[in-house]
Length: 420
Image (cartoon, rainbow, N blue to C red; front, top):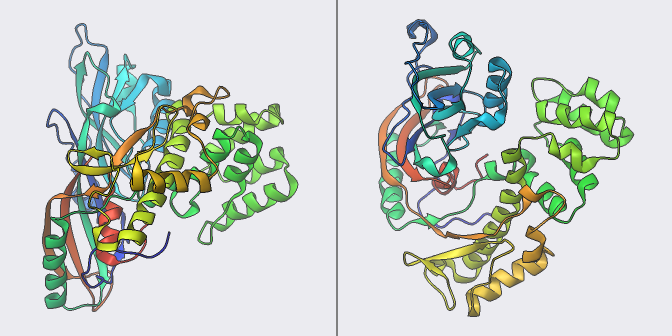
């Protein structure tokens, strides 16, 4: 994506996510429940001792709801640990939203009739379960209202006066909104791969998709994992790759390799070993990539007016909404539709591609997403001397975003650079 920013404030020159505690995400459900971070944001020696969990008696409810606070795990990895530790299928787990890895996050999860003793005994470093309560309802994606973000940006060379001025002007610009791009996390972070794999899967090119997923590297990837990927690309020796891929950083890849050792030509099946919700993320990613490219074209063509309605726009609550293509999608009309058609044609994708018989969970009816992002309650909490970068400043900011929107989109506009 080309470097193009909507806000006019000077770049705040700082470092995002230098430490896990610099990026905190607290989930807010539609019923107003807030999952508050309480443990991993305090120094180790100040944390309360873990006491045995008391699970209330169950009557006719079938789902145990728990708060899960975690540090340096994405949601899927944390749930994989829970599945093993509780001897429970991932199908019996529910959650309202996926949360970042390099962060401290808190979210509600649910288990269908779990073994209570195993819940009480569960202990994995960096994951805490608490506040158990029974419910008749599973925690689902639709339960999420949004997330509150508390973010510390470090290593800022500008003066306190400059920082204050930038943040003040930026918060005024935010009131009008910024382009609602999907963040890079949607595409697999620095590997930027999920949408590319998704496109191959929709085209039923499962062998290419598997090999791309297993072998693609990026510059800063850990050397052991990078070398394992490079070797597999050269040899296609699945058995050797299983030995070389590190357990800690490649659980998904190892699960796929295990399948391929037993079934060397079943590339469709290699993806089938992944959780169903994870497989659907590949479709989400290609939809998001197309959306981002359409929005980028609008920005290049209309500049400051890009977020205002143009001829043919489909509006949601008065805001233009770009296509997330699916098999029931229709293009917008006139100029707005021409931009959508142009991007879809360039990507060599049709709406029909989003209905696949090979793996039905990749199918999507399609949707639209508004192009305007307005965070709520954006505020500067403090400016302080950065204890981790001598002679430099740090700031902490806080804001709320509704579900499906990315904090990194806001940070990208503030720092005027891509955020991973």
